[in-house]
Amino acid sequence: MSKLKKAEEFVNVYRVKKEQFPAFHVTPPCGWMNDPNGFSSYHGKIHLFYQFHPYNEAWGPMHWGHSETTDFVKWTELPIALAPDQSYDDAGCFSGSAIETEKGHLLVYTGVTEQEENGVKNVYQNQCLAIGNGKTYTKLAQNPVVTGDMMPEHFSREHFRDPKIWKEEDGYYMVVGNKTDDGKPHVVLFHSEDAISWEYVSVLAKDDTGMLGTMWECPDLIPLGRKHMLCVSPMHCPAYRNVCLVGTFSREEGKLLNVEPVCPDAGPDYYAAQSFVDDRGQCVQVAWANGWDWMPQFRRWGVAEQGFWRGWFTLPRVVTEGADKLPRFQPHPQLETLRKKAIPWGRKELTAPWTLPDAAETAWEILLEIPAQQQTGGLLLQVGSCFALELTLASRTLHAYARDSGEQTVQDCGTLQLAPGAPVRLQVFLDRCSAEIFADGKCLSVNVFDTAPLRPVSLIPQGGTLPLQLLQVWHLQHVMEPQT
Ligand code: FRU
Image 1 (cartoon, protein in one colour):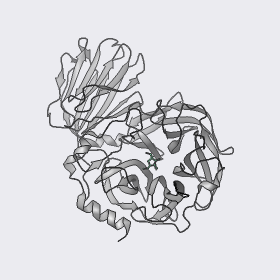
Image 2 (tube, rainbow, N blue to C red):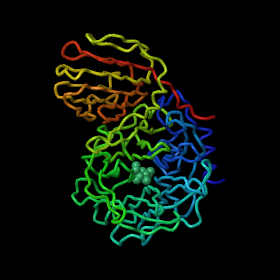
Image 3 (tube, rainbow, N blue to C red):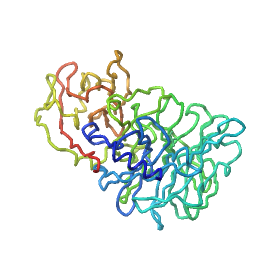
Image 4 (spheres, rainbow, N blue to C red):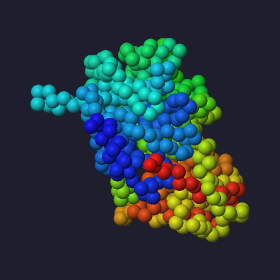
């Protein structure tokens, strides 16, 4: 039986019951998932693949899981797209991207192999292609189409992965994550006329300072107004989990110039972000809402450890250019269709703690606004016993704290600095085991690893009565029903 068929049959037997899942976040049907891959549209549908190891809850030889949507909200599970079944990818089909072409839906991924050479096990990573109809995919006979040997000699052949493809008037381009043999991270650029024969162009962006990690995983280059934004996931980088380098893309020089680093998410759970520009020209980004155990803020898997699955994606967010030419991140407007039941409020101030009704509910959206002139006091949003958001109005700061169940100490999960002198507008999404907070075009994503789901939710005024010019609360729909 083929590896693909074997994986499909396994998923059909071990698919996890939907009650165990988050309500409105993309999760694997069972087993392990990490990075979003191949975020693209094909024949009018939006496709999102993911790094997938169906057989257990730990990372293993990577497959590509597959789902599609028409609205970024309700996702349909499709058959597994890729399995590690060829001599050039038998150690894993690692992350990559996809594009609609005249010949079909083209997937570009990293084929990983391990070779025993002189008693040493060497790892090689090369870029490969598969073409399909939006449902099933065939790997190309020409694979691998981009190999490490096409680059300068002192560039790593072992850490050469995560191709992101796009098209310009003069053909196809791809960026790939890489590093020099002495441990400096960079992103390399390739060009092709037909998406099959590729040539090495240049180093698109690099870091020589040592401040931005040792290797850049999952490079993602997208237009941002007249500039471009290169998001990378730096390995071994205490300063950033994920960083966007905003600069000017010169196609002639093959370089991203005058780069400025921006943090796309202040929380600990935002990695391997991938974006795509939809048919209306809107740039949408999602990320793996977890991280690796070598990361400074790595936390275990919480509720997910109770079931036969691990990992989920963040909510889709729309990326736009702000007046300062830097990116702004907003929840995708289609997420409003998740709003199932509004909880009445109807007052103008919070004088005492308010615990939301329906304490068993775990899927919430909370939208609130505090007037600009309110400069004292604040708000504590307490969720269960393991998560809190603390807003301090004098400094316009929003701190997130979480405590894994069973642990005594509370961990600082990041801070959002809000604009001074403006109303505070917070939009908070709570799912079974995660919180995503949006304010002033910034966001903070955090997993909350309590053994029980996140509840109840209380809004507690700090330092006296808190005026609220808006407070809206909704139960959200449970949409992540696996296909049967
Ligand atoms: C990022 C990453 C990628 C790699 C994939 C393997 O999370 O390490 O660089 O392709 O995961 O699953």
